[in-house]
Image (cartoon, rainbow, N blue to C red; front, top):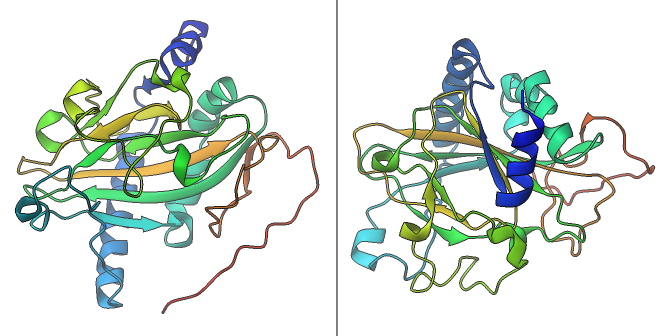
Length: 258
């Protein structure tokens, strides 16, 4: 899927957009699964608004915005189980992380048309810090994304700065790190944006009449231990390529809501 030059670009810039990882049919399957999951959550009265709170947007505007977010997608629909270990995904991951690749967690992020909430600029590091910083995100686009409907923006080479002080839970001070400082990464449905968890990224509001549906898979080298156990999900530890060099058991603190 990618060349040596692509790997060098990722190492230098902290991100890489890979075109056409998923086919039109695979994208449609995941789109339907997202919509079904949202409908089931609403029926179960578990359909919360996950808009980030803070002062990065005036409060009277913030309260009008919506973000749909759910974790552990592979426990909702098998199409996501296939997606996290898709041969075209692992073909990229093994070149960016190494021969051994482990799933950390999955989630969906849906910005509804016209009222989809922004993501202030941030690093993912504060949520699940690791010692060797091999953690990366794979943002799978289920819709065409551009600045009008809130595509992701990244700050190239920002991963080289290491962990930065965040405010709130957790984002960078918007006065010093506005979304406008980022490089837009417009993408088509089926494309995947890979970025290191230290890479500064964010996105603007969805101002269009189109939804922006993404699913996000986080991966790591299994030999990269967490600095703190701050984020434990049901599917954590699943190997998608290679092997875990150590024997270990994962015991998440689980609570089932039905």
